[in-house]
Length: 172
Ligand code: PAF
Picture 1: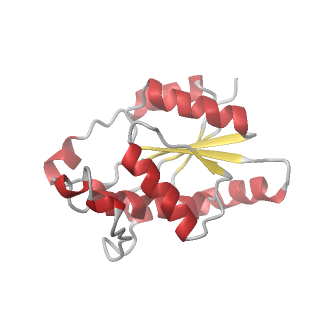
Picture 2 (picture 1 turned 90 degrees about the horizontal axis):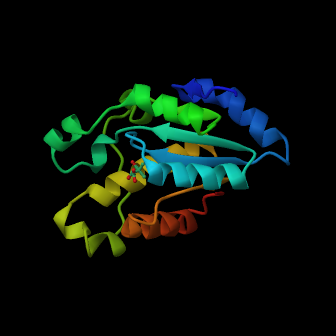
């Protein structure tokens, strides 16, 4: 059984990405996560593995989507167990960047959505969906997957991301 290759930076990913994009019969499935992996992630990964020749999972606890710094600080970090699971689930790549790698300019730019993000969970979590959309856009731009997989449990998030992909003509 092959082990999951851990990638920390955009530059490290580049040669792998080139390899995948070069050949027309390889496809890359992407499952973004904040770690602390569970059965829900496993089912998204299984789907990605069924539908693609390769799968990459990201683990990044995204500071811009937390409403309170305490929640961000206390978010569970279980990298060792997560890596064991990724190996077991036969995931090809893990993207595990530092904050500086994804936010080199700090919190300088944000993607805002003015309709769907303002209803349901939006008003209780100001800035949350803007943080989610911003980090997902960055991850899609770096990793350039063929397909990306998001849980249906976070229904509002799922629709916002689908709309963003359409509105920004993202090739995923
Ligand atoms: O659903 C999540 O775990 C996060 O919101 C996501 C999509 C990984 C972005 O940080």
